[in-house]
Image (tube, helix red, strand yellow):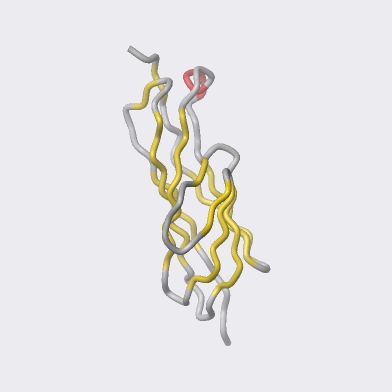
Length: 115
């Protein structure tokens, strides 16, 4: 039986100060045995930038297709703000494609005062 599965992993950096722009990668992997078509990734905080295998518009990206066993790496940015100092920040990317509805997040990123 063919399966439709995917996984999302979000990568960001440490040693972050207020006002830093974080370069973020969200890797969407098709872990199933069928091609995924027409998937959409969204984020409340990450602004996606242009890349290979997807089109972007602000905080969303559309992936035309991901063959079984393959991945698409979405690239984006997030600029830290003063409010991130209090609780840190977690960057999350959600991916939806048909019945698939998953998300991946960074660990909490500690943000310190800009020097």
